[in-house]
Length: 254
Image 1 (cartoon, rainbow, N blue to C red):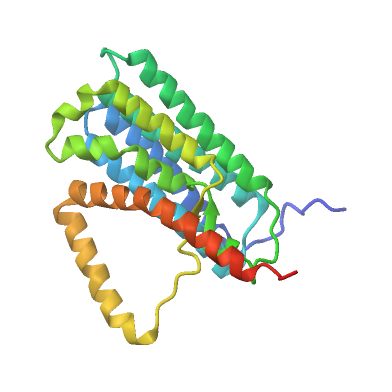
Image 2 (cartoon, rainbow, N blue to C red):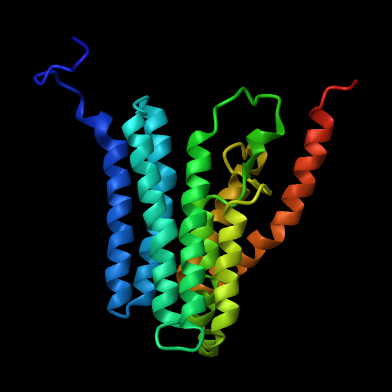
């Protein structure tokens, strides 16, 4: 029989990646509750926590060699909720309810959710290939789901940094929300940190920079997130040009 025996034992550590994924889903769900209570700052931090946990669970699964189809499906479901639904509801609750452009805002939120779902479905259907000599190993196709949530919340960062009038520009925010969704399903190559490495002689400088960055993030969270969002958007033309350059070098000559 192929069915697993009910009394068969499995190491508890094998379930750790799935537990991390479920915890990230709890963070996304709790962010919606905090958003409804008006605690916008805490809601955003929980969405960012979900993004961090999303990066951790896959690495833990690979390190423990316990990746499973169940874990992959669970991860996609959590990503859709945390990065396709929760940020959209936060934007809608803060900006559009009872305001001019409410229907345009809801339409933009629907576009965001649908684009996130399509992006994740496309990722799940993509077949793994040998990319050791391919430029694909340095890039994602389109904006990944965690970055999508990070970018779509840019108007909220601006609002929390003190420019509260930003939420009165409802049509502008609706356009931004829909545009970020479109970037997720685009074919634009975006930089991936999976293959990022540094030389040993720069490790101390890198650690110093990381500590400085985290310090600034805790002291000036919204300003840092604004700069990071703008820098990420500005990197898209650079990543496209870099992809084309690497592709040209790696293509076999006729």
